[in-house]
Structures are given as structure tokens and as C-alpha cells.
Length: 116
Length: 107
Image (cartoon, rainbow over all chains, first blue to last red; front, side):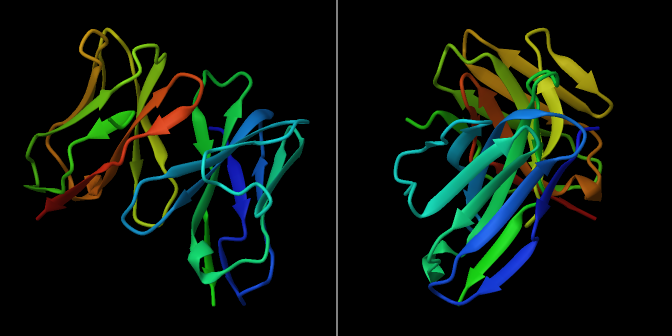
């Protein structure tokens, strides 16, 4: 089956630093990737949709200058949390939509971010 | 009204029980429907797509009623390993996740 690789799995950082999370589709081309955030015991919340070669579309309430998304190739999207603060601590998950994979979403394994 | 709503749960059932999950969606133009399962602090994994004619995969049966904008998932002969959160997902232009229903299968 399709594989999406996300790393790092776990990040602990100091407040004010920036953290980059990578999401790669390993065996298919992903024209669209999605970034989600999930707080404990809550559902997945879509943060943004990124299409290869164009600017990401952010959901209402998500700061685009804080959560920088780059989707420079068909197999790689990155999310950078700039100047992270403790309230940004969360589980971040990416997913990819393949061009020929019947609309199914494939998820990365997630990144647990803890900001001290 | 939320775009996708599910039973609030949690469901605590004994091994071997049959359990049903319900989901409703608000956008009548939604095109495709899925059930995912998510274990704690893991990524969601596709359980099955949901088709208008209904579909079955082993112990799992999914139903879709477009007129009522309702989706269901039935798990028969539940196993301990079925314990997870079950997410209803509806796709129009974006994939919208329901809040999930937590299932605990007890020995």
C-alpha cells in the first residue's frame, strides 16, 4: 500500500525556536497534502491544504505566517512552526492524496511537538 | 451544525459483541465517504470506504444513506484489538473528519 513518511516523530524544543516537520510520499506522487493538528482527546483539525507548486490554503484561524507550508515537489511537503510557544504543543499529522489512488488519504505517522 | 457528527461515545463492550457507529453529515454534495480508525497518538488508518450499495469486509459492514445523509459502521464479533477511535470521514472538496467515537472492547 501507499506509504507516507513523516519525521521527526517527536520534538521537544524551547519556546521561541522554529521546528520543521517533513512529510514524504514514498511510492506515489502526491499532488495534494494536508496538515492536521490534534490536541489530546480531540478530533483531527485541518490546518491547511497544500498543492504542489502553489501556495497553501489555510483554514480559518490558522496563522499562515506562523505555520509555514512548502510543497515544492510531488513527494515532499514541509510544515515549519515558527517561534513555537507552549500552546503550539500538539500532535501534527500530514496526509497525502495520490493522483491515481482513488481519492484515498494516506497518513504520515505524526509528530508530537512539545514546546517548553 | 457541525459538518460531520458522530455518536459521542465512549462505547464499552464485551468481546464478541456487535457494535454500531453512526455518523451524519451536513453537506448533501459530499462525494465520498470513509471510516478510519485511530489508535492513541497514532495516525488514522483507513478501515474501509463506504459505498451507496453498502459494503462488507469480514466483520465490518458499512452503509450509506444519501437521502438521510447518514453513514454507519457495524462491527460483529468484536475483538480486543478493535479498541480504537473510529472516525467518519466525508469528502467533497476537502476531507472532513468527524470527532470520532471511542470503542473499548473488554475481556
